[in-house]
Length: 396
Image 1 (cartoon, helix red, strand yellow):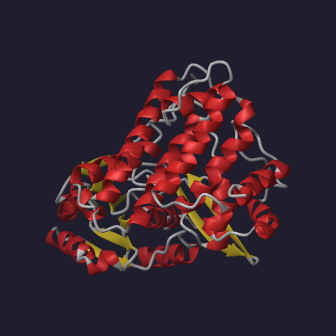
Image 2 (cartoon, one colour; image 1 turned 60 degrees about the vertical axis):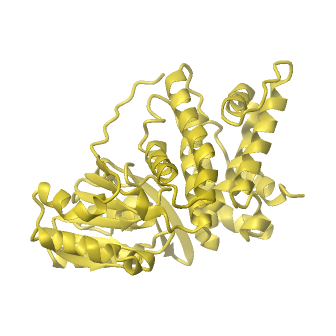
């Protein structure tokens, strides 16, 4: 196990009815003026935004609202948030929604006090923020884990090319997260399944590591994965099952607040490979991950067969073939794809709506000529191309 520093100061308010108390949570921090960020659509129709606004008003908290966040959140709306937040002199940013809304709020929170262009400086040049407004969230879609993570992913079209990048910073960690499982009961099945796939990918990016003697975090990873695999079918069968919804919601947080990743090298190549799919095709992030993760696993399997065999045995329930653990490892990948298909996820380019002829464009978006990807196996351009082609041909 490697040395590590782990600090996540997020306070979680979990349970039915908690969203009605968000004004109290903001007031407890001594904040007076809020930038309220949300997506729109269901959050407005359900009355959630109205409820949040009334809760803020009841504690004398002023707010300026910005709606319209889209999946795969755009920098354009972040600029709007920054402008409105500065004009209103806000001292807190509140997100109401899923990962895209929370990431938009995070980007605004570091962008408001920043003198330069937030996307150019933080997302392209790789500068680290030196300040950020405190922020919190009311989570409505368990998936990205952004309610407990230090990361935020934003995309922007630059010189005719869509750039989708992440920023990791302690300024991105929310001060609080309000998590009411009842808010997730009206999510469409596809969105629920995409969210669960994203959670699993967050764990697997940490699970496949070259770091040795990490049995404690191995077991934490495995427990979270097993719980997700067990819970998703229950949620899809009965969307109003509070216990199942609650477990899935908390699993999303544990998958990405880095509890599963401390003391171990992490990979993240698959996320970067998928970001180019969702940038080019505007597909759901979880759907793209369902296509890319098994493809990445197939390509990197021989790097450490026993780690893949361990995953297959402990997580996917494959009987260990000690005489030839490659068989165990391969069957684990087969079962993972089968699970994704069973919950309605695509597992190939064709099912996702992607095209093999676009692979050169995906590689150009990835910018792989300028750097490598991954840590478990360090990938160059040829490697990434082969992984994309596995994903393109997995149904052949």
